[in-house]
Image (cartoon, rainbow, N blue to C red; front, top):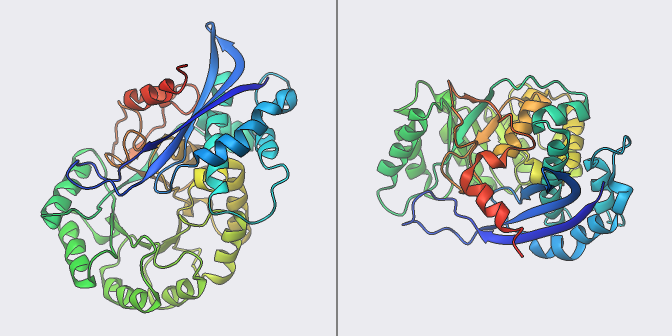
Length: 387
């Protein structure tokens, strides 16, 4: 059981569903990890990408981590010898790496790790949620996962009208909870956006807001005081992700739930958040992104760190809004997962025929992550395999 080739390509990606809004200069790296296992005459290939919201990592993948996988040979085989072991592959990628350096390296490793789990689950003939549950001793029934629709980015014109149209579209698709962005406009205008969306929902606990780490300490306090009376589902990414003092200050004065973790990328970051961030395990939400946290081995370390600090797994709601995070939530018994119904295409969202019923969706039962259930995405992935 070997990795014989790794293909990668960095491609543009837009957070907006509409072409008249600039894409913001984002990109992501798609990878294909080719194994020496063959099915129906073709090699088993695992696919992955650098999740959503950070930049592609083609250079680190190409020059540093992919060569280690290819050079490892049979060292990556599972103990039984009948599969690739993603944990062994992760150890091989990280061999010789020094502590720290979590800002970009973690995303490169997580991108390849996603593809390794896809390949291993395909070799086993299992959907990832079942394969991962077996690998970690968790339980996965394949039951529908609670999801919330992420979106609510600022539109260049007619913002409130287009925002409410977007939210109506989420509700029409079967979503019951949504998340919108704040922090990019004066607070009074953001409050108008919040109230416009609340007018469409059955209660304030159906709406979360995400400040995308924009607020300085004083702005965070003003926003917290202004939003506390609404009783929103959660207030996410308040300030600089490493400003634990401001997190703790807001946690003292803002009774409704907070959410943090999207821009924290390692178990060491999580430990500091638990120690110094003031978050409350009885209500707050953890939105770490598995693909940004050195992949599943790194994410599992974060889960263990937070569990040891008194957190329940149901506090975790992985960032990303795509199939990989959906499988992780199902396998590990997490509280839910983000959905990107129309943003960050073709990577965001679930299977083409996925049905959101009462705010829940099932992960696909196709072997692996199920990228093959997304026609536009699998076409992109397969293009990596062309000479």
